[in-house]
Length: 249
Image 1 (tube, rainbow, N blue to C red):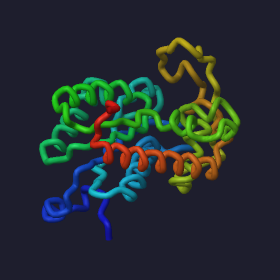
Image 2 (cartoon, rainbow, N blue to C red):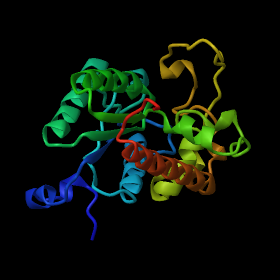
Image 3 (cartoon, rainbow, N blue to C red):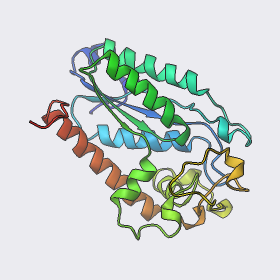
Image 4 (cartoon, rainbow, N blue to C red):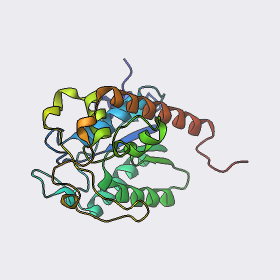
């Protein structure tokens, strides 16, 4: 049976498999409203990473990061957060370890908005340190899925929102046993389309979720997962074919 998870490898397996690519899922432990589990962001990112790696050769998924930068969600109980500086350093050191053992192609799959800045800084630092490193980041799957799917897929706010229509849908597709749709409740904030507002989450909604989680369905979630996995598999294959070189001849 093909092994995908690094934690299931032995040293002998690793040395004899010729792994050259690693996927790293980065998530969070925080409230997503009363209808979704605390581990939602990590569950989604890890599920995507495993599905992608299962269709690639010489690829491993390393253990996910369950803690992210979630201080802006810390008004809700049991939010366990790292600071941005700590998360950035953890990411640097994790990727540095992969490079040390011969992994020269890394894809980061992020599941949480608060991680984006830290991932960007860590990734830039790693690329400067290792110019030949093939490094890519899916920093906001919820945006990418919306870009790839037909525009009429979602009913409200383009499916966006923390624990909203899109995130609830993909949760229903991936781990429905952990979703309580009877408690799905959100609120759509008034956001400027051109200027990024900096917020703490309690400013956006009276609930633990924003958007319209009650509009989520497993079918929408399956479509989201399918387009994301298909796209990432094609992307990695394309990068491999061109040697992770970006400039056109």
